[in-house]
Image 1 (cartoon, rainbow, N blue to C red):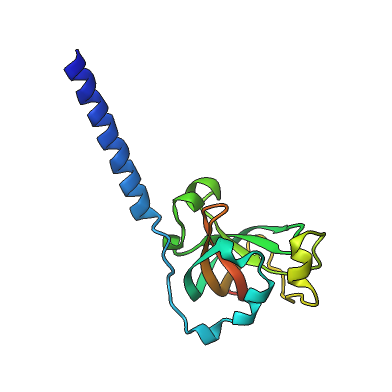
Image 2: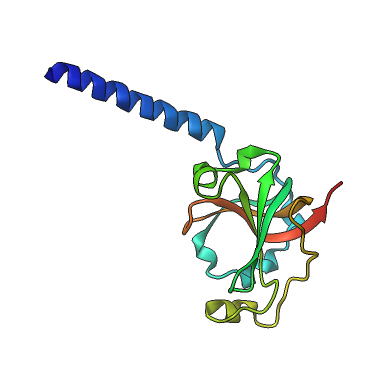
Length: 164
C-alpha cells in the first residue's frame, strides 16, 4: 500500500509539473517587438511612483489589442485592460488574476486624490484620448512586471492609437 501511495503521489506531482510547464509555455511574458528607446519618452519615469516596483522587461515596445475595460484609479492613473492580439505578452499571473488581459497604465491622466502620487504627478498630466471599451488600439511604452501584483503591463504608456 505504501508503494502504491508513493507512485500515485509521483504521478500527481509529474502531472502538476507538466501543467505548470505547459502554462509557462502558453504565457511566457515576452515583448512582441523591441523598439528603439528613443520611441519612448524616458522622462515619464519621473512621474511613476515608486518606480523600483516595476521590473523592466523591455524599455520600449508596442502592443495591439482590444480594450476590455477602463478604470480611473485614485492615484491619478488610468488603467486600461487590454485583450492583446499577441498573447505572448501575458505571463501566468496575467492569465489567472488579470483574466488574460494586459494592464496598460496611463500615468497622471488626472490629479491624484492624495498620497505619494501627488508628488509624482505634481505639475504634470498626460493628455491622452481615452479609449472606449471595444476599441482596437496600439499602445507604445515600457513593458514591465509589476512586482506588487506579479503581472506584466505597459507602464508608463507613451502613446496610444486607435486602429481600424
